[in-house]
Length: 115
Length: 115
Image (cartoon, rainbow over all chains, first blue to last red):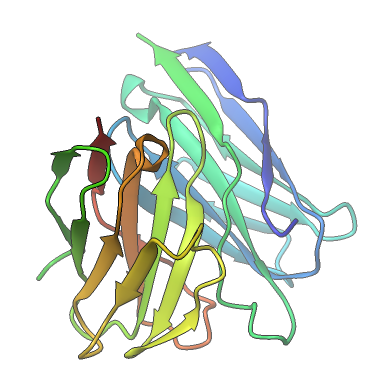
């Protein structure tokens, strides 16, 4: 499968705590993207990390990528109630065959941040 | 427009009826995607357009589903003889990146309920 698998499936924390979500995948990738989805809404792109990058920051978000382990993690620091959402990773496959455009998604991690 | 627009936002129909869902991508985006999302699941890839042509329709579940993008902008997803199992949120996304390495911009989705 080309999709990422997020872990844990659900995570509940208190406001101010950090939240860490993990993603595993199986194929060689061009890049890996993280998306957020609030209940009843569309997905919103958070951050993209390329296969030659190991870590990337964007505001309170920190993403790491370990291509040798085929895994990525998303850390949200100092979480807020507004961070409550589902989070999806999407590895973009590398290589030919016309498949390097198709993002596929797992079931996501449902993060609940309690005020 | 400023974002990806999908209409209708909600559609309730009876089993056996024909349904059309419309997606208006961000201006200038050449790539357009349709996904289907069932409750508690991640988005499931249906079809990808690059310009006017369907570059990959491998995700369409059966021949009741068809999508067009005649002028390389607006796309319509068509479902014939709807079944209760077709009930889901249908998400559209667009991207300006021809080689599929960039981020996807999602619409808010069309929620289809088949009674």
